[in-house]
Image 1 (cartoon, rainbow, N blue to C red):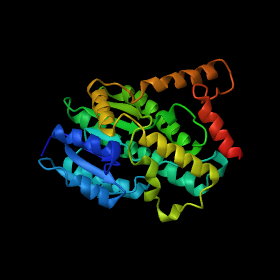
Image 2: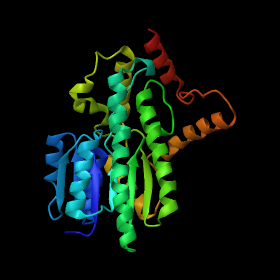
Image 3: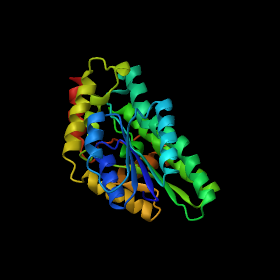
Image 4: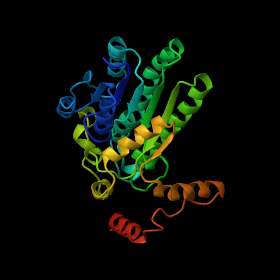
Length: 294
């Protein structure tokens, strides 16, 4: 059994699976967590030569996450790498999102990260105190939607802004108490993963109503943008490990998108109304307005 362990949520596909592959290549024990049992089993079957624990867990729910953390500690001790990555997407005009939309998206995207942080950080700090050689790193998956506020995808934006805030605070809080445990936030832009089809895993208690026009438009635009992404999930996984190796906090898959972040922050600093998000591609904005008003 390796001396290092990686806990990865959303490990059945996308970034989670690619990060698991790189962690395995480094000889880490793997704790693979996903809500989709078939994808998780298929992913786990890939790995030989490393210890693998797989768990079907809804990260939004406290009790299963607490049981997971207890199992990890019992089998491997404190993990060295925690990747709070599980995420779902939902779009549409913000007032059209149902209570079920809010509870599902915030449950997975935000509370999933909250549970990962509150359960594994104390374990990692305890290990650091006991062993001067121990080093730990927590990476939370947010999104460029955590740095910007693209229209017609408000619930997702809110969840990801919260993850950025949580992660920045985690970084600062950790720096107060230790030099051995670090944090990063991953903010990918459009990358081909399964996120745009995450409604396949939507639990029955959050059953979706018939989608509104704005939600159908958002789904179509997201599908197109995600599927046309040139950067792969494997490329992003490599960025995650580079950030951990060099203790970099912000991980951006598309640094060129930071121009929009600068504009947003200038809006704030100059007390300016929010800038047109389609200023550089007015035809997209015009098309979206025409569809929504038509």
